[in-house]
Length: 111
Image (cartoon, rainbow, N blue to C red; front, side):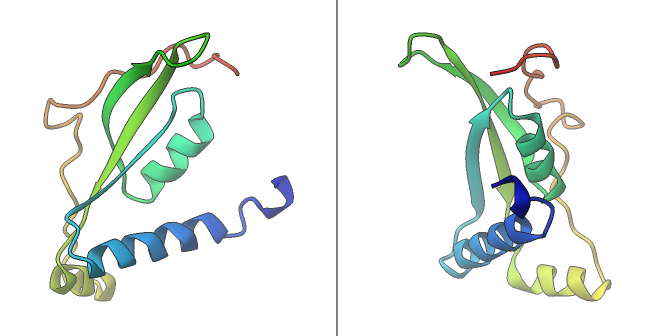
């Protein structure tokens, strides 16, 4: 609901999910969102997710463009050091590495 936006609930939920995934030994967390969801994409990127791939799903009347975002998890020791400011280790930006996905359609697209 709009009244719950920008209160930190989403960031807390993502942190909880990522911490749980790390506890289970996951190396990555991946998610998809529609390309027209610019606010969501910006949020996930602010949480450390990088654009990994863009693809279309043809299971609907109109094809749906989706963006796959990926967060590479740091080992616990590196994360603890990053939180204390000793060392900051961040996955390489996919675009800088030359493997980034192309941007989704025009910025003015709306659902």
